[in-house]
Length: 88
Image 1: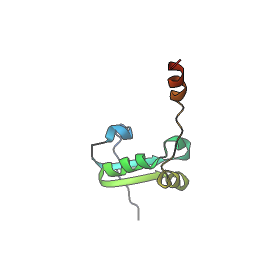
Image 2: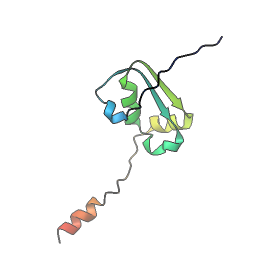
Image 3: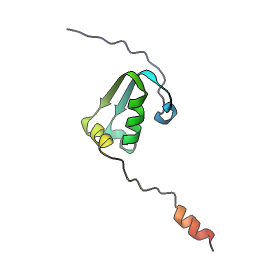
């Protein structure tokens, strides 16, 4: 049995820009090449935007990393050093 699904090509959205909006269908690609963006909050945002259909496409490992954890990512803003320097 051959099943074909017609997919209309639409411009992609940045997940944060989609906050507060809903769409009939959402496709979320999750690949290890984009490991810096594999975060649970982004997946949650994407999933909650889909009204009727949400499809996760990608590698099992990437999906696992994204779902498993809220990363405690260290920020490299040098804010501490800047604040320490301003008190001199």
